[in-house]
Image (cartoon, rainbow, N blue to C red):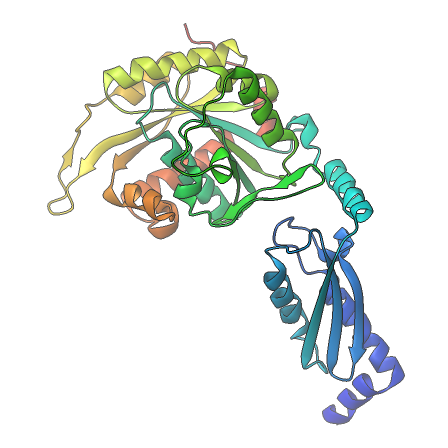
Length: 381
């Protein structure tokens, strides 16, 4: 009886019509791996036709030679694989016309609202700063981003460390960003969308830019990148209080600031300057993260405070902000950055992994968009 029912559904005119509708819905619901929206909403589905037990699908790529072509074909076939009466899928590709790409770009700009630079209260914007280099600011930022993504948040990471960019390597980004009609689609790794100068230059090439060009680049990274809807945008700032932090402070008026320091006095005093800059730019310091807090011997478990103690607590008191985490030294934390697999991904239950994941949870609460408006800003002296 079941076999007869299947034959009626798939063989009768009404049954074939229902099957075609199911196939069309399945294809339309496949998400573009770069833009993150369904193919149907993007106007990329040209045709869906039934030919016996084969579905023939026509897809219009946003640009000829799209690097995600094979991925899209695989996802379309997978979406059709669960339908009764379909055994094969044939996917044919062509490309959108210039007019169609322009119309799509206009719809995406209207949807993303990025020209407002995340001031609509939907995205928690967190800039990660340090007074000096070498304190592990980028490592902390990358792990916070991955921890939030692993928790189910939609996360973007803007690598604003123009001269010392390291985020692409730490995330293991292996694909180039895709651009069309004046819009750039960020690369993705470990569930994090990322944009960095490092994606456009050779790894060893120096970036020799002055203030106006730096300002323009930050505007492009914020206003011309299709971030889509984000729960959190993290910005990895260059160390110090130069042009880039000043530019971003003006472009991201509702951002919260996290200061990264090490326990030693020299790092703490320099890091405090970054906190003072944030306050003068009318940005709220959400908290302090002390990196390299101690070293735990892998053999005996003894803790050694190689860089001293108390710097993070002193900085937090001076800035009127909480000490969010004390992250211990760990060889695996460094190795993860070199290998492109952050520690919170490879070993989330390690002491450093737990500290970073806990910091991400606390930070999300402290930097929630509503809190940016409701909490009083603390001004260090």
